[in-house]
Length: 253
Image (cartoon, rainbow, N blue to C red):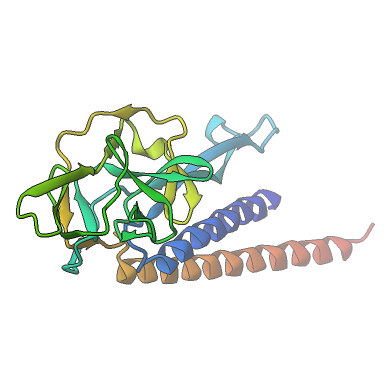
């Protein structure tokens, strides 16, 4: 009887963790370049029966164990903004940015220009090119960014293109190993950088979150109902336990 209570409790703990993951996805449904997280669970077997008259299959009790989460790295929908400094990546690469804590990576291409003409993220971090930060001159206009990340401008009255750098796109052997750092940034962690020759840059677009809000709300309702169902089962088991104790107390000595 105690095993049923422990199994139910393990399920409730895992459901609570799953609810936290879903809630975070829903909260970031409108975050540019956000990648949804998914929960992973596994069966944990523990021996709960010790009497010799139990058959082998009845000796092990299965609990629910929260193994962790994995990241859905699928492409988010592209939204056209027509802003020349808005960039989206088509493919699996990441933008490289320089932060106070070192080099970080992001899929959020909502870029701007700071007061000294450098290309920066919405939080002011420098966007890195293949030769360092991308810097514009005061007379630059008609900014054009090719699919390979090459940044060209028209300078003053000059009608010839001037190159200001090339956006650095970074690929990884295993994106699941990237570590979230907050502010829509990732650290490389144990992931190894590798050449990415397939990803392209789309100027005038922003990659939106790949979270499907309707699906996530459906999952949230499903988790809530499952939690309530387990809670009802645990209450029944508790009542049964209480009833058994009361009946044992009534047995004559």
